Image 1 (cartoon, rainbow, N blue to C red):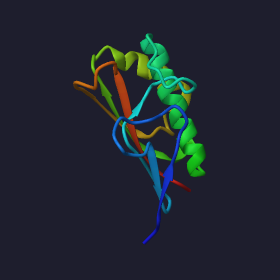
Image 2 (cartoon, helix red, strand yellow):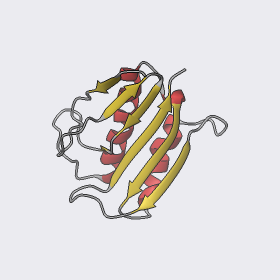
Image 3 (cartoon, rainbow, N blue to C red):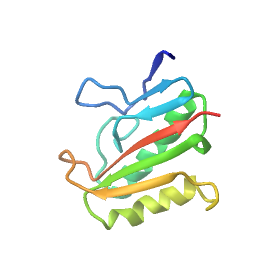
Image 4 (cartoon, rainbow, N blue to C red):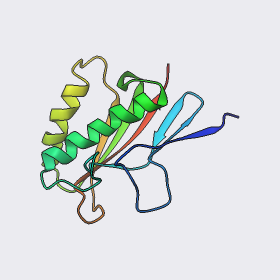
Length: 127
């Protein structure tokens, strides 16, 4: 069995004692990623900045894992307002412009911790 490697991402910290991401063999899993500012760790006022930060973290996690966003198999997106899907789609299309090369994705509307509007979890298989 492969050993778990914890991936530490600057600015992406949890309130609970859990890592942002782990790599086991060629698999990468994240905890819930939030859109805090990568430099300050603070949540931005703008939903657009929050979502842009989330996608920044996705790129950083995949780089730390030794892969790219092409290795992502699935994204689970939690939003507090269905209208936020449009904002997520802006960054989604920047990251995955080719409709024939996108990961699976599922979005759900749910209550999130105070101050959060969007959070993302991913699963990736490194090539």
